[in-house]
Image: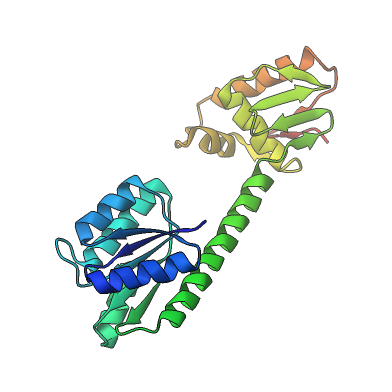
Length: 237
């Protein structure tokens, strides 16, 4: 059941919207001021918000802006439909730029509002499905010859025997296995794993590659990481 927040100080309109949405089997939470709306968003997750602009305590514009700020940190990004009595183009553009996804001018047609809600929820669902698919793709195991790397379990095995790698060693292996034909310079590996600038005299990567090789050699005799002299390292195809 989708959860919708209504922020509207007009009691009659608030009740009308609540009745309309509950009839469509949405779970509805109501607020009658901007500050109350902010409180609801802080402590609850919603699938969509309908927000009047002329609110007591905190204007609808301020609420929309604050909600979008919270979205950045809480990753609970949901559509916002603004209700406004202002019909000027500048007012509509302003509310969209603040973070609203849509707006309707009062008085509005309930059937049109319902249609817009359904469109936004479908788009959100499609986006979530796409994100989940991308996440699933990212979490797929990487396989190179007899090495298997599981990103979710943070585990690497060679010939079905587990390698006891440090976090940095694991990160190096993951980067190289994602592009098995690529030659990686020390600088590329260092900046990808440590997220810092690389200084040429630093032998951190050499030490970590050496440790990875030694751990693999305890399980398998084949060479899995080769040195490309003057450039860096790549997996041994």
